[in-house]
Image 1 (cartoon, rainbow, N blue to C red):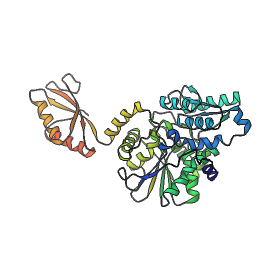
Image 2: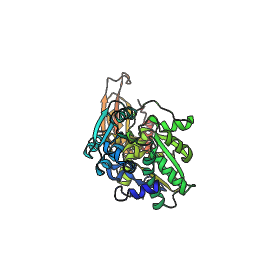
Image 3: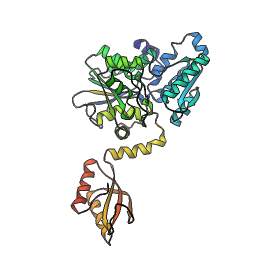
Image 4: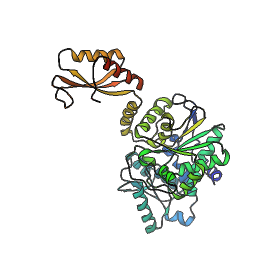
Amino acid sequence: MIWEAQNALLGIAQRTPLEAAPKIRENLYIKAENLQLTGAFKLRGAYNKIRSLSPEEAAKGVIACSAGNHAQGIALSATKLGIKSIICMPAGAPISKVEATKNYGAEVVLVPGVYDDAAREAARLSEEHGYTFAHPFNDPYVIAGQGTIGLEILEQLPDVEQVVVPIGGGGLISGIAFAIKSLKPACRVIGVQAATVASMYESRKAGEVTTVNDGDTIADGIHVLTPGELTFELCQKYVDDIVTVSEDEICAAMLALMEGQKTVSEGAGATTVAACMFGKVDTSSKKTACVVSGGNVDVTTLSRVITKGLVKSGRLADISARVLDKPGSLIQLLQVVSESGANIVSINHVRDDEHADVNTCIVSMVLETRDITHVRQIKQALRDKGYSFVN
């Protein structure tokens, strides 16, 4: 099915680049599905599903549920094939993804809640109107379409030893893992989830499909509370390990991709790079391909992502110090900061603070710094001069 999907996708999905990323980590390569048409890998599985519809099914139309990327893939594929598409999306989906889905020709139904709520509404409408439900991950045709990425990785980097893939519901990693393990069994396949909604990770620990509590994550593309039965079975059989990453780690990886690879990734896509950057996946001795699954990030969130990424990597530091409330004290503090080589972004001098004594005030500074080691050096230099910290 994966070979058939690859042939069917010729002229529809792009063969995305696989490039080395030495500025991020040694032995690291980026499979840039963020450069795919519609901005994410989902087009592959979506088109493969839509093309499989019978004439009777195509005449009634197709319905799907998605946080955005599967939605765009289904919408574009259905429009190309002259089929009506209805997409149920969580009400909190990024506006950019909602508008893009509409622009690809779909009718969008916004559903209060998260992906699982949108899935229930899509199932209801499918039953009511006779639409064919195109599941975003728990479908053999969708999984086969995503598996074409595995074929491309093996063709582009034949000596690859490790492939790292984001996991939401599990469709992407199921297809990739099946393809890679079938053709190169020695190659490790590792999944990555956001720690706040690690449904496949928890299911693997429990030995059965498990629903996790909802949590906030910037990785909206993998915000799935319950993985699929089929994808869970495939992950159990073909995936070597699953790890999790924090929100700050995801933001740092998004920033690293912008700076090191000159590429924009959404949160879900950056999870794989985050896992390698923060020691969850060891790349020191294995040639590793990270699938950056999409680049559909809302630009209004980028400034916050950059700030969090700078803080996590030690490029931006927030330091609050106690200073004697007398003339010349502030100048002395700033002299220490200046000699350390940091640049002051903002500063706030407060007398009436709960952390200040009668004869002290609190000076809060946001500093541009080189890295985490530099931040430690600045704090030590301030300690050596007798300053204490609030945070």
